Length: 259
Ligand SMILES: O=C(O)[C@H](O)[C@@H](O)[C@H](O)[C@H](O)COP(=O)(O)O
Image (cartoon, rainbow, N blue to C red; front, side, top):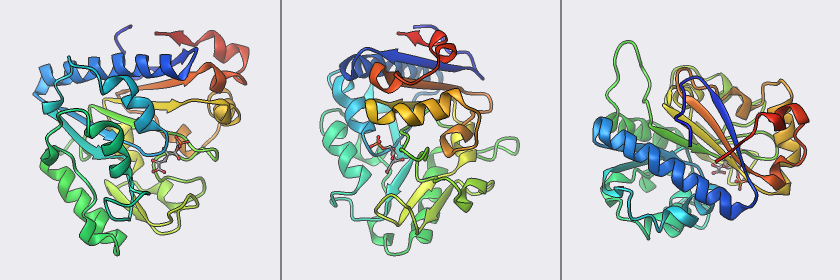
């Protein structure tokens, strides 16, 4: 796998979702190793949707990764109890945390006592982030080692939806949303400045259902939420399978890399 150069975008394609999970495992294991060597921990933010399953399929069996040094946050979370079927935490727990030795205190969840007040839950999540990320005058935002994102059929990512005022949030680290078009409506989400300060950001999109949106996002110019993810000095990677890549133009296809 080539070493990622800051400021670059890589689009990796895989013949199947199984192969995609293998590539993702190699990528995450490598970034985890590099981060732990560099600063003794691996800070990662996870999305919901299909991502946790796709991520964990191979990674959960990886014995080389030092999961004890992982510090996990959620790229977005729904304002529901942790044991609710809509909880991104529950999904990640069932798919990954139940299989790997990440210390429970290193997994930062929404405070379940605050789910009736999304704004308060967002503020609490900012305080939780501040425990891990010391910021400087020059960098006012948390700098994750890796943020893993999915993309919806409307081009949303995290809980940042097309046309929503949250797309303009420039100061807060975490925002609340009360009117998410994807249910459930009440959520908290990392904001664009946090996504764009990350060392590495990776989108994961698989299946024919993603074809039209990937064509729009990767072939055409635009300002859909997923297109606004542009790490300032970090890398941006796309992990997609051949089914999702089927409608990409030949110019984009020429730039695709196999891992
Ligand atoms: O909690 C959420 O709803 C997600 O974080 C959301 O942003 C998700 O990643 C996309 O909707 C893609 O979902 P799929 O991978 O299921 O298509």
